[in-house]
Length: 227
Image 1 (tube, one colour):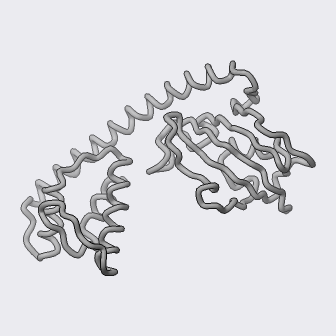
Image 2 (tube, rainbow, N blue to C red; image 1 turned 45 degrees about the vertical axis):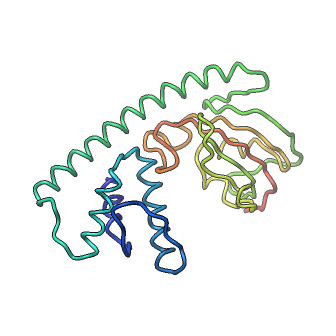
């Protein structure tokens, strides 16, 4: 379970931690690394919906780094971890069900909008700009610019933000992309509405993409590199 990994990270690489959150100057490699690890842990916990008491968390890290004995027995730690894992599983199941229902409603309404086309697989797309030339083949590599977001508008990835287009094999991406790329032509820009079964399905792609999530992409086919 990811929760075990995430909670385990709390005890690695942290140099010190006060019981109260305080402003600290990030004026050394050690402090910058500590802050970076804290950011990564925070994002993981937030993405998984795990609620923690920051004071207890700080106390625990300080105890470990100072060599003090745990304030919880082995039996208590096992019970807490089992309960946390069970809660996480139940929360993920609830989210998965809600995402599936929300996604189904969205796609049903979206397919009736002007300019939206639906393929036999269920992929939906809207042409923003037409391209020219031949479409990519399954054996080709392509260069694309793209941004992806969830139904609530959360952007989870963007080559535009990196100011660097991505290059990959046509068949090296999620099924919805594989299908769409072979319909596009160089210079084309499309908006894709990808059902979860053509994206990351029930597993999602934690921490950014939840289970059963419909994904919306703006995709620009820059060029076909060839086989």
